[in-house]
Amino acid sequence: MNLHKYVGHIVRLNQSAFRKIAITAKSHGDALENCFLVAGVSREMRKLICYGANLRIIVGATDVVLI
Image (cartoon, rainbow, N blue to C red):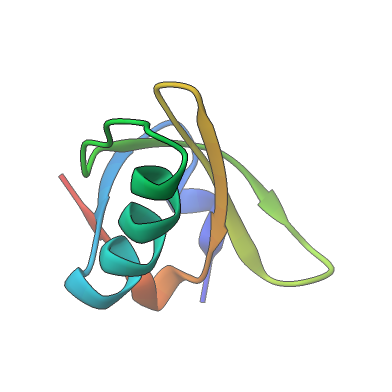
């Protein structure tokens, strides 16, 4: 799968992936919206590096949907 096609695009996480991240954010008192910018690809792990508000996450391509 060509992960570079996601770079520079806005994505949303699927429900299970977002739920995991939301639990962590809520425990820190942060508000979280399910909208992230794909900034790069981790070649070693074959994962997407995404940013949203003040959060950086690394997820697989199966966990995201292009908007």
